[in-house]
Image (cartoon, rainbow, N blue to C red):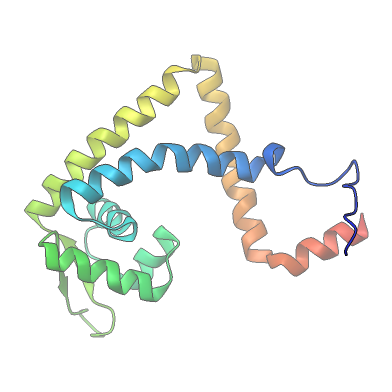
Length: 168
């Protein structure tokens, strides 16, 4: 029988770990939004994210969409296919390379996006209503910093993090 080792005092505590706390907030507010777009429009999570990207960047190609949505190429392809099948987007061959098809939102896709965005805006307004103007400004500044640092962490990979930890 294996004996369990007690956790050291400096062990990572998931409930207090900033990335996990951010994930929980995002997951809790994403569930009602996902239920809405899934039940109302038959959209998957990837389909919704791609719809939101092409609503903002009409004519984006799959690579651009994947980067914007943090989706792998297979999920992007499937999501674009879903949007085309639902009539929410059209795929047009790239001007110079057919592999880089441009994805454009249709009128029905724009209407669906607008309905989903209205609910998303209501969720955001409710969250922000809990904060003072000063807290909102501080949160915005902090998120800008965290987004920048998280991009650097992602670009450096786990080996860089281990090396940094070992040298400090």
